[in-house]
Image (cartoon, rainbow, N blue to C red; front, top):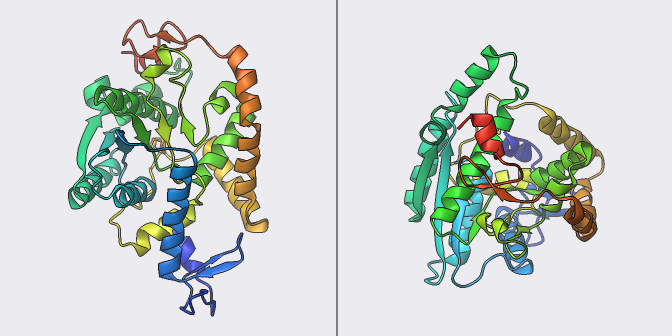
Length: 325
Ligand code: SF4
């Protein structure tokens, strides 16, 4: 859907610096780009982010969280190009089957085929196997029980997915967990953490989330890297299409809630003031050291969950609480 928006914006009569007809007008830079230079610019941006933040080093074993959508497929594609058969770095992908009828099965099929094409090892984990029920089944229970305080499917989904992905990455010996988060995702997260007053979560944002140096219990969290955090969503979508990647374009039927209102709000601002999403993220990055200092004094003590043994800020972790493990 986003990619179609990008195509609609194909500039009439614009030309790239190389003289070729442009396929994209990058308003915040005031530039026109042909297919070749557009794709090159995306790859350069991702490589620069990886280099600037030392995201990858020799000996790393990188687990890519792959949904089959544009962001995670494009990040896996670029990583496999950047690493290009390096023997000192291992790359593999993991997908999560939440159990969303009419949506997830197709994307999982695409993800598996894509990994086969790239020659990347791939594994799928399901909510049903891990938690005893799919997301659809869980939401059926929630709908039938008025006493359940938390009613949004995205909360159950996000908590379960983060839990399984981190656990799987750690048990597979991964040293980094790579996600396809783009500029839009990051700007939305900045805004939401601010609205919710969640300093602790805000303090864990950034290009690399590596808290393992701080505490022993934190070493149970695999550092996350986000090579696309400075690339707008529509540009990732256009890149995936121009490169001919087989991606899943449908939107989850459960989509909704405050995150999506934040997305619309930022998109409206961006249309009026090109580059505003970058400003949101840049300002946040400048404030991050101060946010971490404040959060450090107030952060919850990390324990091990009494039920599953995973890291938790209370006696029982959020996943066991929500999924009643
Ligand atoms: Fe999960 Fe919500 Fe995303 Fe759907 S929209 S995949 S339910 S987090």
